[in-house]
Length: 504
Ligand code: AHR
Image (cartoon, rainbow, N blue to C red; front, side):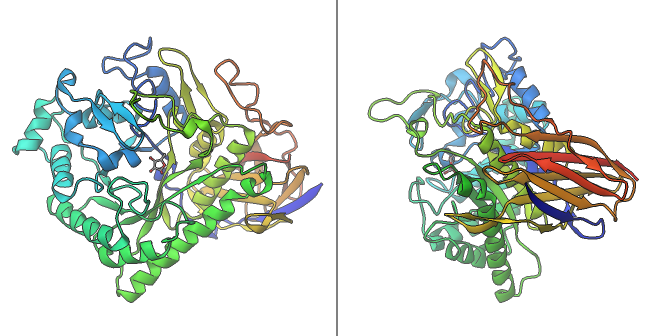
């Protein structure tokens, strides 16, 4: 058996646990909106056509913010199509996903859904085919109380109170050549800066996110952030980061180490933002909105959009079936995001329902939790208070993509109000158990109140509508605190674990 040690102390703090770390994303893509959150014929649908079973799962998952309406979709979107009487709304081509959108759901419905689901809406504006004026119009429609054409139009459409949306993404993945209206860094930097400046004339306190890179492998990564932030620094609050991981040709070891890439990505973006800060003599810091991250098997048939004359409404697209190893990687990404809580102030797992999602639905039928649901839900529920700065002493393992990586990864949180300590850990070994020890000298009197591990000897096990519960996080009975105050627990290979300690 391998062994590793973590040291934790309430005096060593990275920063607060930020509720917005547990955000998600709903795009007009495949069945995320239609038959995902919205399915008027479903037995649990409410008066707005929203599925009650999905809202319950979103609440159980602990999602805090939801980004909308895209994604690649937003770069060709006319927000005006989605307001007013539903029967008068146009059907439009969605070029990003080669689909048709009947606009049954638009901004007013989305915000209503957010209120019902208890989540904060986060809005993206189209800086692909559109620009400053359309962003201003949408902002006026959403956030101005009344007395102007667009705010009164919102009221006439049934939303008396302003939507009061605080977080706004200035475009989506504008560095990507696949993006409708793709731009060079210089072109985007100018447009984002002027859009932000004008939006702040309506509401100076908005939280504005400029596009960073679509992933750290982009040829323009680093230069894009530098150019964009140099221009927009005083107007921006966040720069975005996006990444998707998948198991490449059976290389499980590298896949399990995906969070090493996420750590390096975050560190590089923060360093770039700080370099711009120094050069520009700025005082504020730019934070990171990691507003798309997940496991996504992009090369599988599930991700191939329709083609030719076929422009379906809500086609089956990106409906990845997640296995146990995928859930371990998702849990590890959350560990990475928490560890960077000083710089990552918001994050959105992409996406929420059906599309690379923790929640799956049948149209008009059942809904279920994928394996990836569980580490998200448990982390969102139990990571409270402050994130601790851990010293991790772990054996290393060789990986093709990232070189030598620690076999153990972990993060811990401490809630000073209740005294509770939560530890989230992954064992990235493919075949060895790992004995984790944590001396609790700085947390005297703590005992284990809950220890659960997500693992299965078959790491390819995936949940289905017929069997979503054969593999759930199970009690880990090896967890204990010795009389001298050493926490020990055995972590099976390819596993994610949560430990909760109280007392003291
Ligand atoms: O989440 C799926 C897609 O991935 C989004 O539309 C896009 O922003 C990213 O490339």
